[in-house]
Image 1 (tube, helix red, strand yellow):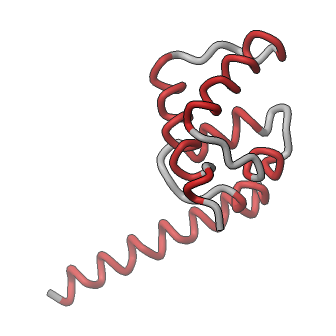
Image 2 (image 1 turned 90 degrees about the vertical axis):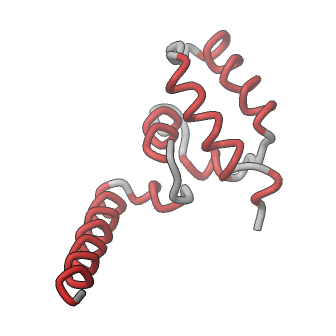
Length: 102
């Protein structure tokens, strides 16, 4: 029991230090809530925008989908493969949406 607790604490400390190191390296990463797709959103969007621009939008998933189409067709963003697009849309629709406004 004690060994299991120790292993859990060590894993937790390791994950926490990795997140802190990543956010020190990329300070704007801290603006994005934790969740699957966070890194993909960060690296895709921050190639052209401040992450502050992204998080202030608070768009619905449908409007994020339209926005991605616009960015590809009008702004020169590379086309995303289906898996990455879904991961990014799911993240934005969950974490950067009107339903998740403070």
